[in-house]
Length: 293
Ligand code: NAD
Image (cartoon, rainbow, N blue to C red; front, side, top):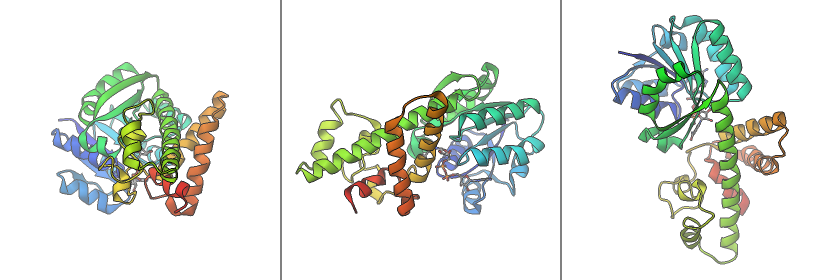
């Protein structure tokens, strides 16, 4: 049986690891949060005492960490020195393209195959096993990872060589951040001008403005009962994470010489929200700042 080490059991990692358990894989997990490791064990996984302990003997190592610095640190210090020969590395975190390519190059020098496999679909998609994976890596490495990805996701898009998954993800999240920002502005504008939120939802969800920020993550309570707005903006996807992704987008736009004014304006708004205490809330919570409450 293929054995899996799963590092990073947060909002996304834990449900993804649980789906692998549900599909019959042996999963050993580690997270800096002992509660997260306990939750994996309660679901039938094996609790590891460290990343080194988790990767010991694993055929495939999956990482779902916050950002580039954590991925660089965990691979450099714990995974590369302790993984068994022939292990495949699958990094599902959203990180900068440069870190993804550097870490994959280090893995290759040490004789390992690695793919970047960031995801879209939120915690709901992670729980339901319906994530979209954007993959960068060689054909053989992607083929080897495919059975696992099929358990955790519904749509698997091979975007090209190492790092290209992150390029796709950063572009996706810049569109998401900007569209949520516009949706929040529009809902506040409608409120002020006397149009109720449900009616605006009924129109925009079936008209040319239709987008994920409206139909899945509608930033006001009511129209989409599962959206974070209905639970006081508990994440979901935190504003801090979206700020990180828009920072990655800004860096990538600069590198590519692209004028990304809308991304930059949305990043500024998120920074403001995070600085005023919204970092742990869902990113759709920026509507409260726009509304002024
Ligand atoms: P999270 O903060 O809930 O989880 C990250 C986990 O990593 C935490 O439990 C943390 O304790 C753990 N961690 C940090 N450093 C570690 C280390 N050195 N060793 C072991 N564990 C460590 O974040 P999340 O929402 O699960 O997001 C994870 C990644 O997925 C991010 O890159 C994010 O941008 C991306 N993502 C998130 C969503 C979403 O909706 N939440 C959607 C798509 C992509």
